[in-house]
Amino acid sequence: MYEPSALNGGHGWTGKLTKGWKNSGVITAGSGRPVNAQVEGDANQDGNSQNDRLPGARRNSFTSPDYSTADMRISRRLFAKNGYKLEFTAESFNLFNRLNRRYQLTSDGALSNAAIFNYGTKHIGINYFPAYYRAPTNFMKATNAYAPRQLQFALRLGF
Image (cartoon, rainbow, N blue to C red; front, side, top):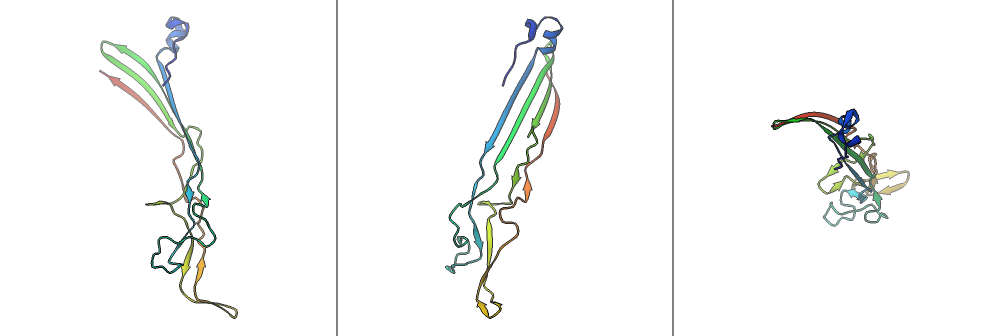
């Protein structure tokens, strides 16, 4: 929190205009979280359909989008006498209105199904495939976004 001193020592109209201000801010920035390219189904047929990765993909081989936001608060004491205080506050969240993309979230992080393993048979020409992978259309694509810029204003009376 930063509380600048009033110009002109607080005397005159410039002092009254610049006296009593407080401001603060928070900047949050982070790189994307690692994502596994998992397969829905039991591709290696070990009886566990929760641990199979896409063949050829290493653990955490993909990265989700990064995140960055700046929040700011500015306030000014308007009145203070006889135990009463009146304060004006303006707050902004995601001040620069940055688009922060978001994946669909599950209990263990980002939804990361890179393929669906199907046990059914498939014939392509004369070739026979007893099982196959089907790629979903939403792998590594943001399905949502975090909140856009938000502003809020308040008057607070303390007594």
